[in-house]
Image (cartoon, rainbow, N blue to C red; front, top):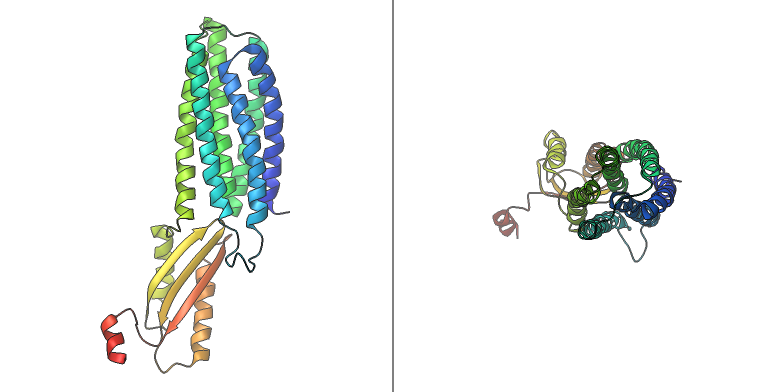
Amino acid sequence: MRLEKKATVVSTSVAAMLVLMKMTVGVFSGSIAVLASAIDSLLDLTVSLFNYFALHNAEKDSDDKFHFGRSKIEPLAAVIEGFVISFSALFIFYEAIAKIVNYKPMEYMGTSIAVMIASFVITAFLVAFLNHVAKKTKNMVIKADALHYKTDLFSNGAILLALALISITGEHLIDPILGMGIALYMIYSAIPIVKEGLLMLLDAALSHEDVTRIEAVLQVQNEINGYHDLKTRESGSHIFISVHIVFNVSISLYDAHLISDKLEAKIRSLFDGKHVHVLIHMDPYDDSDINLIEDVY
């Protein structure tokens, strides 16, 4: 089993345990903040299950129907995860306002604090594990999952602080106000996840830094006369690069092919941990110049 899939199994198991803990305490205590955290953990569970499905299908080989594989399932999963986070945040915001309007003090304060402490510690270990996997595999789905649980870590810490303040001051309005703050933070954290996923689905080019690194490899290759039409895109853990390479018109096809193979290997080495697909079109002249093409024909 791939490390990414193992990570989704771990996050799913942890989310299921946290849902059970928080939902029980949230319902009995009447805390909007704890209930909001429980709902977020329930969504974590759903998203982690979906991420496992996405990674399982994204790693399938290309076939007659999907010539380039199914790697775009990964950014699609990230976009869906971002929207799920946002919609859950809106629900939490609504519940917080409802509690302010219909005031009701919290109960089972000690139990709520104990559950949130346990939740904070468990989530901290999970975030550390997911960050390790995301850094090692550079997988977008795991990166989004790590960011999602990181927001949980912050919200759990904030809820702990709020429960402590309520216990000291007796001011129960701190709970729904904090719930509103958590909801806004959840929406804020979802924006970069959705943005990155959408850009990948729309076949946006690689970052300027990555394109510059590719160009640096091409520019130091003395056996070619130039290059043009460099195009890049990313799809989940796959990177697709195409470029036209200009050779001397007298070079043999065999030699041009060897040089192209060497260039492909150098470009692939720039993106360790990614599946890099390089397509080189070999030109005997620079066909990017329309006037030159007209002269040839």
